[in-house]
Structures are given as C-alpha cells and as structure tokens.
Length: 149
Length: 183
Image (cartoon, rainbow over all chains, first blue to last red; front, side, top):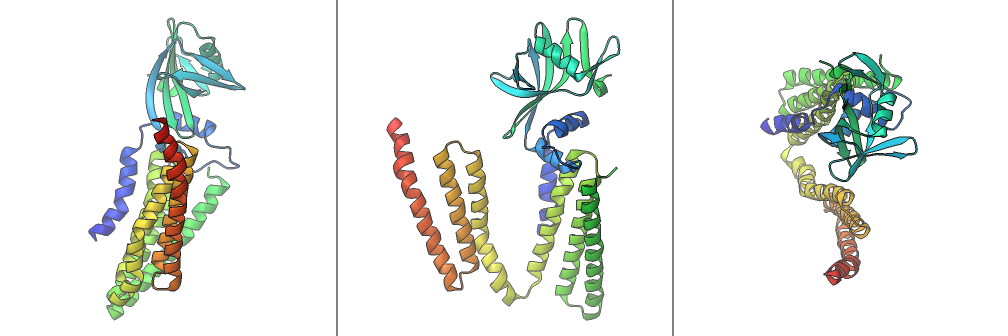
C-alpha cells in the first residue's frame, strides 16, 4: 500500500513543488507567443509544460540593448544572452494612470537611452523569452496592468 | 467557454470515468460474494483508473497552469499505480511468468529513455548519434528480456550487443581519437 501511495503522489508532488513561480499574465503572454498556433485554445497543462521546462529569473536591465530581426525584438540580458522581447497588450503609467499599449512601450524600449527595463526571463531548450514587467524612464514608471498597486 | 478540443477530451474522460467506476463496483460486488483477494485488487485498480480519469478532467478544467500540469502528471501516476496493483494481484505462478521479465527488463527501458534524453541535451553530432544508437541497443535488450524464454529473445540480445560494439567502434576510433589528439 505504501508503494502504491508513493507511486501516486511522488511525481505530482515533485512537479507541483518544483514548478517555477509565475503569474497568470506571464502564462497568458507565453501562451500567445511561445506555443505554436493551434486551431483551438491549448489545454492549460501545455502552457504549464512550457514554464516547467524553463528556468525563470527576474532581471533588471539598465540601458537595454535591443536588436531587430524581421518583426521581432530581441533584448540582451544576463551577460551575452538574448531573449525574444515579449510585452503585455497594455501597461499603466503609475503616476498619471495613463494606459499605453505594449507596442508603444516596445518602441520606447527599442529607442534605448537612459531607461531601466525589468523583465522575467524564461530560458529553455526552445529559446529565451523576456517578458517586460516594468519600464522606468526618467520620472515615468510603466507596469503591467495587473501589477499596479 | 470550453473549446471543441476540450469538450471532446472532457466527454471522453467522463465516459471512461463512469465506465471504470461501473467496473470497479461490479468487481466489488463479486468480491463480496466470493471473497477472492484478486477481485478486491481488481476493483481497487479500476477505482484508481476512474480517479485517473477524474484527474484528467481536472487537468483540463482548472485555470492555473501549475495545478493543471500537476493533475496531468497525477493522471498517469494513478494509472501506473492501478496497473501495479493488477500486476501484484496475480498468482505466484503468473508472477514468475509475467512480473519477473518486466522487473528484469525495467532497467533497460530506463537506460533507453535516459540515453535518448542525454542525446537531446548533449552537444556534438557524433556524440548525439552514438547516444541514440545506445538508446536503441537498450530498447533491443528490453525486448529481448521480455522474450528471453524463446530463441527470439536470445537472438535479440546478441543483435543488441553486436549493434553496441559496431556503434562504439567508430565512436572510439574517430571521435574520441580526435578529442585525445587535440589535447
């Protein structure tokens, strides 16, 4: 009976406890950009398997280096590593409560200059992805809509 | 709103859940009359299979990806535990025929999976190809262990060892030789 109980709980418990902490916004962005387009909404465990197969780290990048390849933007982080830059559909400017689009923020980041970008970097065999969670430029601070306090 | 894909999977899992539940109850009823222990094992096994299908349903309907992935793995764990119960419920003679070869060949199956995983993670074309070949060798050994009581099993074992030697020879001479030469 002990063997049966161990067989049942060992792997699921290990998966649950070793799963990287991630927000629902990050899951949604990865689902949209990383999983190959399907004619139907992918089951949630497919998104989970992408996150579980990656390492997750939060990185603050000052004066980000952004490169354009076709329609995609790549950002350098943690030494020489590059990741596909992914943005949420909307961000909030915290002092004025102004809503800006992800495209607008991508343009701001790609222009470079004196700004700090906080990204959540997911690295796996499939590649690296950097999800923008916060951008600070001068006195302006942009955060993901749900990150607002 | 559930997609057509989710509806198809949910309907299939729910149907299996009900059927497994029905089979578990049927075996339990017969066990109450006959008091044969193997029937109790079978009933529990099908109950675990029903739970496995319930877990599969949960992996589709729950929102957080972490929970969904946990239920996804729980589905297979419950099914594995169920089959384990069926295996241990057989008589001693059947165990010797069925369980012993499985237990004997399990390390080869594990070696096959690990060599395949190593081939994906390793750098270098030659090393990858060599690891894929070793993975296939252990798959052959696994099959040979299942058929060891027959001529086919012995032949497969010989074939696996010949394949291993043939794959190791070029790897040792060319690839390892080149690495040593560079040093």
